[in-house]
Length: 131
Image (cartoon, rainbow, N blue to C red; front, side):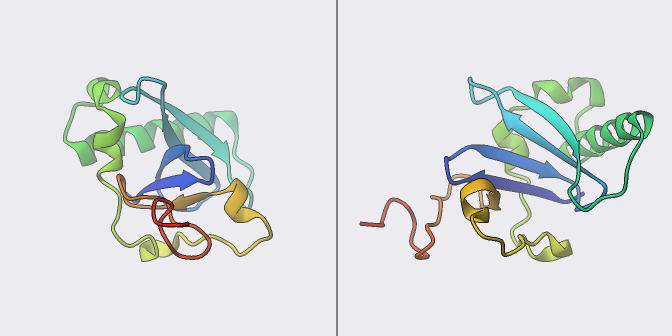
């Protein structure tokens, strides 16, 4: 399973689960920074998927995540967001998860980044070092 930690220009974090396909699945941390919520939406370039197929896809994705974390599926909700984010693949270009070059995509999209590492600015410097 591809697990990609991502952050947007506003500092919001997500962890995408699985590769690019007809559906995109991700989790977002809740306000406490430990709990998380699961989301599944049709991909921009994906094929239409029925509600039943969407539900089955989401279930398979969550079961695969539980297996990757070596926890029983019913206990998955108790795993902290940062523990899941730590499974981030070190090279986001593996398995072809690549952002498309579009105008303003950096302002609106989520960019893959290792958890705990400062966000990179357009100039290629971390936000903390940019003057």
